[in-house]
Image 1 (spheres, rainbow, N blue to C red):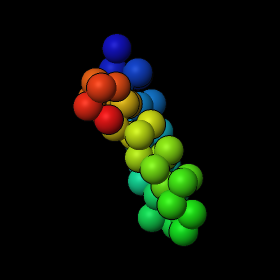
Image 2 (image 1 turned 120 degrees about the horizontal axis):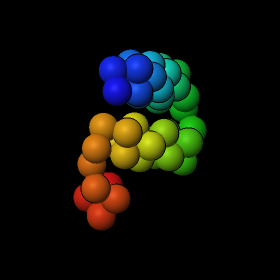
Image 3 (image 1 turned 45 degrees about the horizontal axis):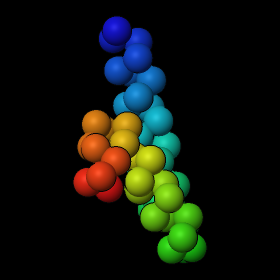
Length: 46
């Protein structure tokens, strides 16, 4: 279980780096939606 949490945290960190480095708003929105889903937000809330 902890391994899944660590992997999720690494994925979120990579997404944050991508969001901060990407100027294309469409790609930023997609990455942000994935990040929120990984953090447990409901799809309806996103």
